[in-house]
Image (cartoon, rainbow over all chains, first blue to last red; front, side, top):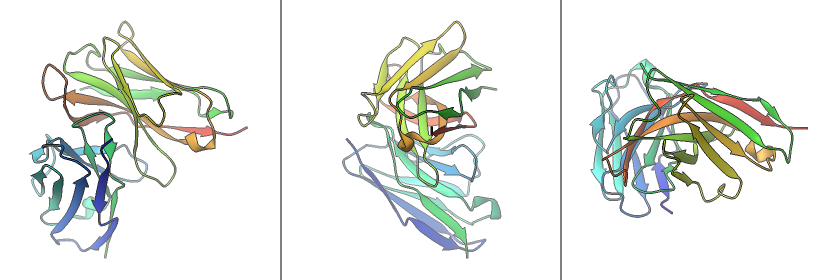
Length: 107
Length: 126
């Protein structure tokens, strides 16, 4: 089974900051990597699919990159509504697996 | 606009079977490029993938739960369901249903889970 490891597990940042979250797969998953945002009490929201494709309706300050085993999610200029928990997910093979999450907090 | 809604008991006794249904509205569950899935989130923890089902009945499950999980689909009602047997307190979680897009018509690989239900809390307690 493929394991997903995110770093950091938590992050403090300020409005306007550029933030990067990384995700590493235990084996190559090509570009089958997705990113989600989850706010307390809500369902996750798909931000990026296939490593770098922006889901419809998601602001362009979100971007994704990477292939193989190493991936990044970048938020170019943090907005107040971006403070949430972010998860990566591999969809290359079953069992589909999520990373453990990165909690993004206000500094 | 496609919407998913979970339903089922919020309280289940230990050793019994948890049963949930996800109702799909605004679109057909029989669309060929999508699987339908279950994900759970224990209190204060991360997301745990349970399994997925195709409208034909093809399924994939998390190996850690495979011996206790059954999923089914009812295309006439546009619903799919989850059954988790022999539950313990460790199965207490928010359970979500979601749609998973195939990357091609063969469904060998997948894109993301683009539509989610709001989630339903299930507590296992006597």
